[in-house]
Structures are given as structure tokens and as C-alpha cells.
Image (cartoon, rainbow, N blue to C red; front, side, top):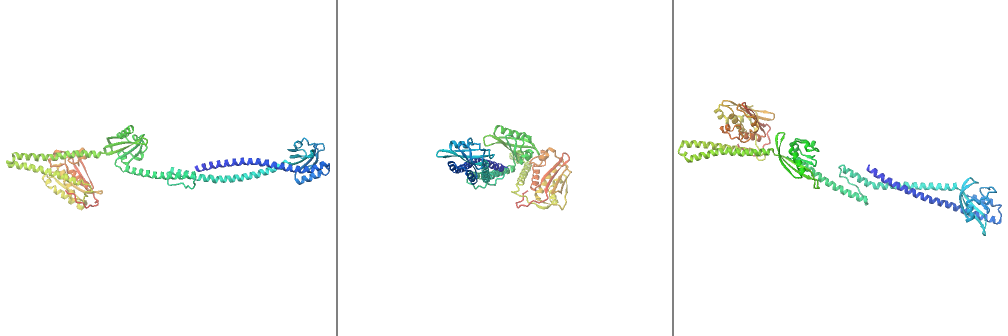
Length: 603
């Protein structure tokens, strides 16, 4: 479209200029040549009149005019013009066109009057004798200064106009040929001129549409060629810059999308220009649907909106921490907002980074509780040991029975201290990452592991008359670390017996369920209140602290069970109702993971 407009505009302009110039030149040349043609005709008539004058002078001087008419007619036929001889009084002596009326005088004819005055006369007028418009040239016939008469030559004006028409036709034909040639040459020139411009326009349109690998072919060394080469350099530079920007943009998007932190970018009107998947998860938004919309329209998380507004308003960084309701409950978000500019010193938008620090804050709480609990759990036996040692030093060494009782108490507290330390070391070893210590597992008969755990707890069960029933297919096999699983089952059975009354029953069951091996330890004990269930597997967490210490518990047994399940690639769960007992479940995968060569985790 652009090419057509440019081509036809230039071609129309060139054609109009050419045709106007050619028409003007043809008119001027035609006028001049027509005047020259008339002058040539008049020169011919003058020459014919001069020849007639010589013939008529002799006849008029000698008065021998009898044969003059015949001579005039013969000369007229030879010359192809009308010839007339007149006496000095204007009467016609001889006329090749016929004899006019005797009384008709021609002194008043313009050409005769001019010839009488100046010796030469010219006129174009209507001939009454012939009924035609004629062109006349008349010469005075003078002999020794005496006017004898007039010699006149004439041509019908139609012959002159016929010559003019033929000349105009030839001139028009030549002009038409010249015009066609000029138009063809203009076509070639305009096409040659517009071809590189058209290529430039086409390449520019392609670049505007996103195609940057095209270049303009430039051969000319003129200004258009210079423009084409400059355009190619600009296109090459633009391609390189765009490639760099695209690569950097892709890298930036990849970095943003791979971040675990949520990232939101908004413009000056708080419309979202980018939102990564992590931010979508945190704010429960669809990134594709949120783009282009105001942030306050797509989310009701006020701290995020307030941080963006404050950053855009003041142009500075904003940091705050907020608690919001997420899909899994309350979340703690660390919000960092910073402005970004447009390169001219103005704020063009803001970038907000959302970091879910819920687990971090929970771990901080757990750490504080753990330190407090460890300190308390260690302080109690250490304080007791220290107190009884001081008592022994003071006076009890002399009383052997009292000393032995104190030593038994010291030994019991030392054993408790040893148990706590061993459990902590077990947890530390279980929490090692898979890269540091992969858990080796072998195919074992599940029933054998269950029976081994029951045997470990047999003494306590007999003492309290608690019956442990085992339900398991003897042929059931699973990839297990037998010592660790046995320890986990011992902890669960001990926990179940502690929660049960004397003479009750505890069930130990194992069966495949889906792709997992599910091992259940079910009791008829006091049960666990719902508010305690989410934290039951935390270290040192006790539902009833007094009851737990009464049974010699360290508060680490269920935490060890949880980590043993995780080390097997499984999980733990619990269901309970107050007064109706509890059911603890181990869910272990039946498909064995690739076995590593690392040493076994010690128990």
C-alpha cells in the first residue's frame, strides 16, 4: 500500500511535469514554426510575384499586352499560384483565375494600397471572384521611377491551413512519441528511485511486526544508498539490542518464577505488571488473570496493598511483617517493597517481595521451647544429683542405709539424664539430610519386627497385666530398617501402655494399604484432647507433664517415631478421642528407594 502510494505520487508528479513541459514546448515550437511557415509561404508568393513583375514590366513598357494573359496563365500553372497583373489605376490587365468585371478596380485592396505606398503589400482576405479566403502578396511594377502597375501572387488560405494542419499533426505525433518515451523513462526512473525506499518501508514494517532478521539490499551510492546502509546498521544494532533485552528478560522471568519468594511488580497506578507463581500461591491468585488489574482489586491482603501504596507515595523502601490467613491457616509474611524508576528520576512503579516466614517463626518458637524444655529436663536430674551428693558429703555417708538410698536416687536420675541425652543424639542422627546419611533398607518380614518390639515391652506389659495383640500376615514383607522401626514401635507401645489402665489391651496391627505399609498401635487409654493433636509429635511436648514424668518419659519418644517414619520416606498420623483411646499410625512406602552405601543410622 505504501509502495503504491509513493510510486504513483512520484510517477504522477513526474508525468504531469513532463506533459506540461512537453505541451508548453510544443505550443511554443508550433507557434514559431507556424509563423515560419507563413513567412516561407509569403516569401514564395513574393518570389512568384517578382517573377510575374519581370514578365509584366516588359509588356507594360512596350504596351504589348495581347499575349500577357496567356503568359500569366502559363506561369500560374507552372508555379501553382494565382497570378494577377494590374494597371496603375487598379484595373485588372491579366488574371490566371479569370477576368473580373471591367469596371472593377483594385486600388482599395489592402495589398495594392500597401504596394502603391511601399512597393510591397500583403493581405489575407476574402476573394469575391473565387469565393475563397486568399493570401496575397503584391509588388509595384516600376520602370525608371514611373509606376506601371502591380504584380500580385495569391494562394488559397486553405492550402496554407492544410500545410499548418499537416505540420501540427507531425508536431503532435513527435510530441506524443516524445511524451511516451518520457513517461517510460520516468517510469523506470521512479521505479528505480522507489524500489530501495519500498524495500526500506517493507523492512521497517517487518521490524514493527517483530521480524528483525531482514536487511535492505543497497547498490546505489547516492543519498538513498546512504539511507539504506544507515538503516541496515540501525537494524543490526536493534537486533543485537533486542536479542540482549530478550535474553535478559527471559533470564529475569526465569529467576523470578523460580524464586520461592513471591514477587509482585506494579506500575504507578498500582496495576500488576508481573506476578510470579510463588506470589500467586501466597495471595491465592492466578498470575494470568491478575495481570493488568489493580492490586487492591485482586487481593484483600491489606498489608501488601498498604506497603505498595506507601512505597509509591513516598518513593522509599517499605518493610513490614504481617499475619494473614492462608490456605493452611495463619501465615506470617515478611513484606519488602521498593520503588523502580523510569530512567528520568520519576517513580514508575514498585516491586514487592513476599517471604513466607511462617515456618521460620514456628521454628524459632520451637527452638525457644526446645531450649527451655531441654534446660528444664536436664536441670531436674542434675539438680537432684547435685543435692543428694551434697547431702552425702555432709552427713549421710555414716548411715549406710541412707547412703544407699541416696545413691539409688542419684543412679536413677543419672539414668534418666543418660536416656535424655541418648534420645537427643538419636534425633540428631535421624535429622541428618539424605545426602549425609541415606537410610539403608532391606526386605524384612513385618511380623518378625512387630514380635521383636512386643518382646522388648513384655516385662512392662506383664507387670501391668496389659495384653498386646499382634495382627499381621506372616508372609507380609516390606523394605525396612528393622532396628529403627523396632525402636519406633517400642516407643509407640510404651506410650500406649502409659496411657492405658492396668489389665487393658493394646493392639499392634500391620497391613498393606494402597502403596503403603500401615502399622497401627491402638489403645483404650485416656485419649488426647483435639487441641493437643497438632503438636503431639513435637519434642518435649507433653499432654500431661506430671503423668509423663511419673512413667519416666523424656518427651522425645513420639518425636523419634516421627523422624524414623520420615527417614523411611513415610509419615505418621494420630486419631484420638478423650476417654476412648488413641490410634497412632506409621505409613511407610512398600516400594524401596535406591539403596545408598552410607552407614546405618545407629539406634
